Image (cartoon, rainbow, N blue to C red; front, side, top):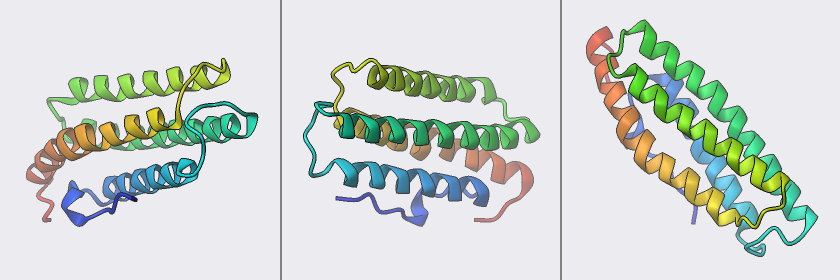
Length: 143
């Protein structure tokens, strides 16, 4: 079942909200890809698809985190370094997933999907929302 983006999840910064929505679209594509596949990297086709999905996640993360951190720095966000630590931990985990796929370690597509879901629920909906509230108050953006 796909995750449906709702304006409730917006943090109030259009550029970041559009990127978050694209993260949800990526999550849905990944989930849909593996819906009817086996749960392990038993064959090269699944392995290659999973590797490409991890690469797409890495590409998204680098681009998005640079954008988000630009807003944090420009608004002198006091929680910037704590927030950045979470971004760095995410990137580290993506590299670990990439390495696991390359080394043919037993990893299920569901593990990637769960990782993405936990980021959506734990970071985007909470930590990024807090930054969005701060940013709107600092620069006077109206929701």
